[in-house]
Length: 182
Image (tube, rainbow, N blue to C red; front, side, top):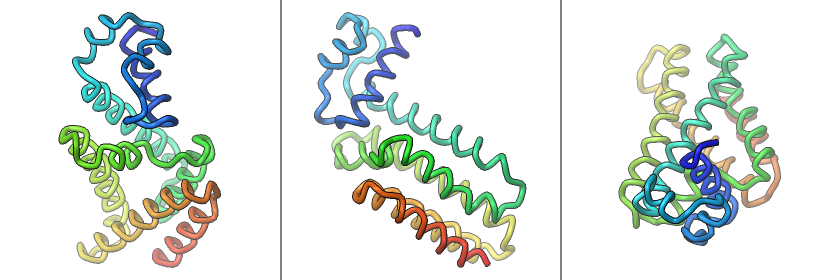
């Protein structure tokens, strides 16, 4: 793995499991086994590294989601499968929540670029859900409301599964999504 990707991979683990604010540049340098100059050749600041983290997190998450949903052809099945993806993703990450929500909560508007990128990720997911619901419902308002309801169920289940360190919020969200889609 090249230096830049090693830095990003190290930052990814530390930011996600330890927290963005609790992780210092020196710890990333030490754990990535790179020189300080190498880190600053690739990232001018912790904020730039945080932006790379958000971009990588978003890319990996969407890649995993698409891979899971490609198993289905019916839009309703795909909409329900987002919760199966969430359950797998959540268990794999030890119920530590969404990388994007976690960093947004930590920075609390202190970093405009990270905030903008994070909101763009969430909007991309909303748009994706709307694309699926518009294949089922011909009325724009209905498709949009159902997409946003599924989005809110998904996001709520993400947060609550982190709090309780259990999958029941995801299972309940899936059941409610199934009811909405029938």
